[in-house]
Image (tube, protein in one colour):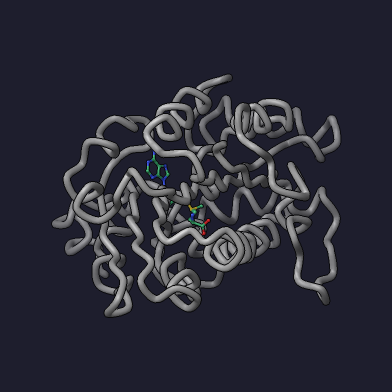
Length: 271
Ligand SMILES: C[S@@+](CC[C@H](N)C(=O)[O-])C[C@H]1O[C@@H](n2cnc3c(N)ncnc32)[C@H](O)[C@@H]1O
């Protein structure tokens, strides 16, 4: 997409955006120079940042498979969709249960353009898209498309994968997650991943705080304790709160160093 077409669709190519930067780290082509510059700057300070992106994406697929195959979930609310790539949530879920219904939510207009074009449901199931901001969970919960697609009296898999760290502020993510979970019935699941500085050296942690303060990173890392608190009141699924690459890894997986991944993960069930 050239810059003029992008502008016409409400996309500002001069500002880096998380979906496009993540797409760049994953080796995709749907990104602009500003996204690549931002991605390169973060990678200069944290050389393994691409490994974290790859581990996060693999976790999304394993956790979706767990929900569809083991937990029997047939409805998914995936907030922070990202640009479509291989094995998106609906593809993994519908491979096991073709009638699965998925609502994707993102606040990036470019993600919406691609999602509508590429995230096509199986004939038995359904996919739908909402352009909305996770900072306003009420607008997601009130959206007619959500209610046309999902039955909120039946369990839902709430996927908040690598998106909560764009909610800035100490304690700011918890009320948002709480409002979303309140709207879902017993038997629903929360799957979340979140960037953390917990595994960095004190020097890396100080550098990271500086990048945030100077607006050179938009990823608001959280410590384990604050991430785990998002699951208060839920039954944590084994193995609990672990780095993304350690949540039910494939049997032949080589587990990378925690300081190369820097992403907390957990899955919880609403009792
Ligand atoms: C790093 S990508 C993660 C994509 C996908 N969930 C995954 O893990 O592979 C983060 C996504 O969250 C979206 N996002 C960031 N802040 C958001 C917000 N406040 N509301 C909705 N979506 C947001 C971005 O546009 C991007 O698509």
